[in-house]
Length: 248
DNA sequence: CCATTAAACACCC
DNA sequence: GGGTGTTTAATGG
Image 1 (cartoon, rainbow, N blue to C red):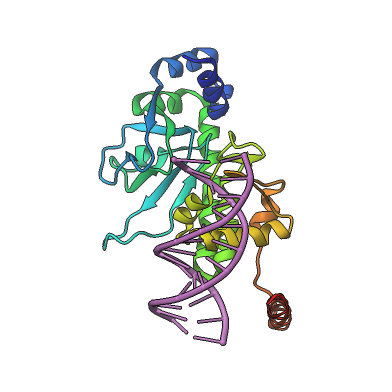
Image 2 (image 1 turned 90 degrees about the horizontal axis):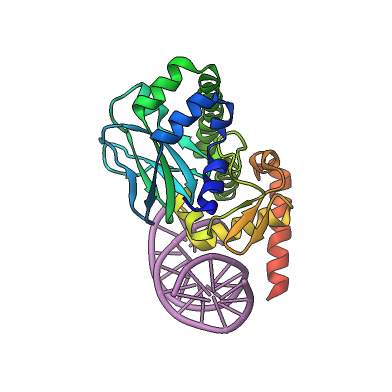
């Protein structure tokens, strides 16, 4: 294995740090790494769930599919993120499509190893419980976003979600994500995403980089809302209108 | 009206 | 070549 890949693996599997040496060596033994090309599926709805899956590098989206085949909001999974414990524990099959947004490395931990850890390691149980808790938070937040939030909030929330330190510990200051990928994630066009990012950048909530985004304070970004009392909203709209007229 | 988007463009990495 | 930032014309609530 290349040294770079080794570093990538360590960064993306921080939950392994809490395991005993004997447990960790079995995990190393059983873990498989797979390269998924952009647009290809990591797993599909209806497939038998046979692994706990981690994103070692790249970017992946989880796409729930409704009965009509119509897509709902999808979730980004950034490097360091592991998912599928729900599929393993509760159902024998995946209930979502998981698609690589770009060429990605994924780790596959066999179900047997997953349950072996669950049966013997308190640390691993702790990892799973923490993860479920944090994800519940995100889903709750997502409900709010889906109902009342506008496009700017959607972008802010989508980016902030991928900077979650517990769920995606391998994401540092900089998240590698293109504006087109963000558009695919939250169902917006590239230039609408750009527009939102410019505003958020202007507020100091994030910094735009080439092919990526820096977020100094994910909580501040997550808390962003442009929903304000009507008076202030009107004032702001008038001010923006005045500026754009002036620019002509 | 207003927001959004596709298409096309010129940069820049 | 791919990602970014902008403009313009078209579209739909």
